Image (cartoon, rainbow, N blue to C red):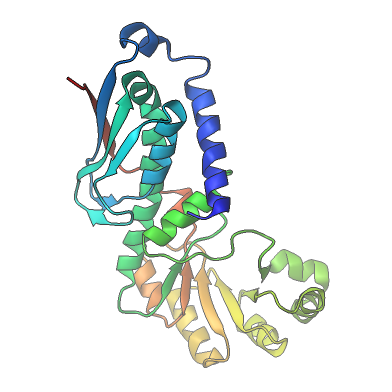
Length: 280
């Protein structure tokens, strides 16, 4: 995990525990003998790809710096189910951290699982599955790491690291050519992509020098026509309304990339559970 992602995780864990534990877990304080130690086991209960073990670790470590971890599965590994993580430490810390740890691990594993399902669906087409900026606020780097763990690829991280010229930018700049020229004049080194809704806009973007085009809300037939029309003059990305049921047909059109917002904004949490036993 790089430093930026680690900072995001540490901030997220601090906020999660402040929200859930507050100034103390009343039930645990009342019922768990002070100083007792326990072992917790997190188990995967549904098929999917695990990601977020480090996030779960961070929750427990924030409550008990001496906690001991034993990962029981590799990050990104697809399984039908089974043990995921063993944690040993202060019993009260394990019980108090349960919900925050499971929330993070289940959500990030859900993102990795969604990405893996889409990647599996386009196998053999040559197309790559990309994520988008449709992420949970404050969790972008973690969710994008989960996408990679599931076999997908990251698009841009934010508005600062690439040009993606869309219809509103084109309207404000006075056309595709003007928008591309303005972007290149501002920073010629940033990667640049132009959103196109039809073949006329495809031609305008290529003539303006764009080497990557986002084909917005086109049908598989329209995408195939665009692929033939472009003839390798630019890389092509399909985007808009792609589902797990349609992604294979979209990818078979010949585009190099398919971006799917659903792998982050609509990922279902992976079913996980945690059991705790006192050390004897």
